[in-house]
Image (cartoon, one colour):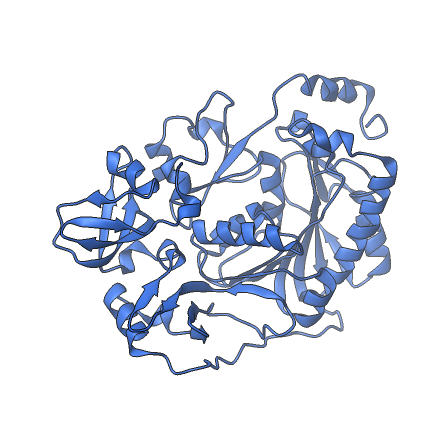
Amino acid sequence: MSQLLTTEELIVFKKEYEKEAYAGIRVNTLKCPVDKFLRLVDFISETDATPFCKEGFYLSSKSDFNGNHPLHHAGAVYFHEPSAMSSATLLSPEPGDKVLDLCAAPGGKSTQIAAKLQGKGLIWSNEIVKNRANILLGNFERCGIKEGIVSSSDPESLCSALEGYFDKIMVDAPCSGEGMIRRDPKALEEWSVEHTLSCATRQLKILNSAKKALRPGGVMVYSTCTFSYEENEGVIERFLEENPDFELVDAAENFGRPTLSGKARRIYPMDGGEGHFAAKLRLKESADRFRNNSTAILTPEKKIPSIVKDFLSNTFIDTKPYERILIKEDKVYILPEICPDLSGTHTIRAGVFAGTIKKNFFEPAHSLYTTADISNLKSIINLELNDPRVEKFLRGEEISADSKTKGYTALCIEGIVTGFGKFSNSTLKNKYPKGLRIL
């Protein structure tokens, strides 16, 4: 650090480690506008906004807001270290973009990107470690992502299979984690010069894999949560030297501090976050590279049963978003509107798991409701945040309601679809998944 900072800066840096680590939350605008979230809670306000993301806020250590809060269950918010929000801000995804998040678990950057896409385009999130990929999938479902794909593949094979397909790519590479030291003492215990250098070698390899999946003119952001020059500027310099068809793009942001001729950004604890580095790269439009615009041909394995069609028409006002149906054995999926050939990609989930075909009925899945637009649902029960039935529902208990509704019904908290149940005699039989319930 003494090589990276001036004497005065190093003193400030050290003093930061006498303080508590930063914590943050990001409002998931796929399910809840920022102004609505601020009206519903009293533990943050506009003055708590971070400089790294318009939807991001600092969370005080004195706050008791945690994963059991109904708004977290509803997918309205994601716990996100403040400076970690910076790299998706640099990527600047727009509705209609096809975006790859190559090292995605647990899903902070992917869910941030998906919110920016506003349900238009595609977010493909990959995590090579299978159990971490399943955590990523859980966050996709909670945050209401319909136009997404989750895979568990090594970067080289995935990017080769999807050559030239993406408009934008996020590479938040595995690193030595120096920016995690204040939050996780193990990060310091595991640190070594050898580990730092091996990380840099792996990071360059991942970046060279990622470039294959980018279309000419496309943008790629490389980021880490570490401070070392070798893993940050060093990796970018070596990549640009090996790949003259790429150029470093000005980050055009003023958070943190500039590096690499002022075009990339570094964030230290004294800059308002635990630590991050991000650089934006563009594949030149003139690059002699393959542009892949392929779309998967939908070939259902079997005819779609009438019980599935009937359920969808009885549940949704507009069934057009649910027309891309794929059936695998007894499982029903709603594919993303934009979907490439999935061959060789080790895909865990494409689109939304809609439910299971039983012997003579269709059993809907939790994710079919959490990804649904409330305005498109025919049957809902909407509870206020302070309604005691909210906690009962999240505990998996039955709840009562003065309703003439019968059958499957979406349960909403402050207008945010959180789950569903089945109405019978003014009682909602709870269908909230056991693994998600408050204990």
